[in-house]
Image 1 (cartoon, one colour):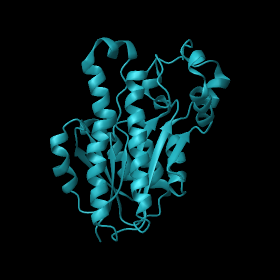
Image 2 (cartoon, one colour; image 1 turned 135 degrees about the vertical axis):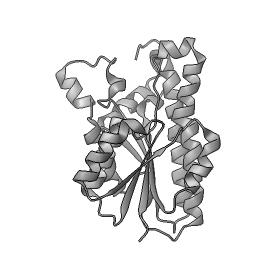
Image 3 (tube, helix red, strand yellow; image 1 turned 45 degrees about the vertical axis):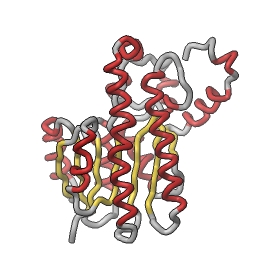
Length: 260
């Protein structure tokens, strides 16, 4: 039996590793194979051996540069049976650095948006061509609440995530119109997550941190649970939906004088 391949794009992140572990623990999919895709797979060696030893799943590592757009078609064509793809790759430069260094802003857009569009469109086209192959196939992308409204503190990162969220919404609508294809599209709008990118962010007291910050494992479990549901957009933690709704509803005359 051919493996049902799940591509984890940007596999070196803490969120990616948590997703692999959660899916390996709870997924009931037969013949599941995780494809860990990263620019530097050497850093995945210990994780690869750990997961292979602890869980009854097949794991493969593949080199992929999400900014090397010319290589993407050949990369996707190299897989026999893509069952799902999770786009976790991301780049968040410091706002002040990106304002003065266009190459950082460009890299952010290429990683956070263009790489996702390039790869996910190829997967989407393939799913449409193989519409009867599998039930339950999925496309997931990790976006961010940073894209909900442009703020001085992170707009060069946030604009990319806004574009990614819009892309995923359109992709969900595209497959929703095709009612018989059984393809699940989920955009994850993550709030604060306890990763390396959060180390320079100051967040209130212990109570505020507990309410606002999710661990990678908590986020991964939330994604897995929602994959069994029907939503096309997941805010995690859920409180971020209401925080960002409040921010979006602020009148311009108030919002433009606020430091957020």
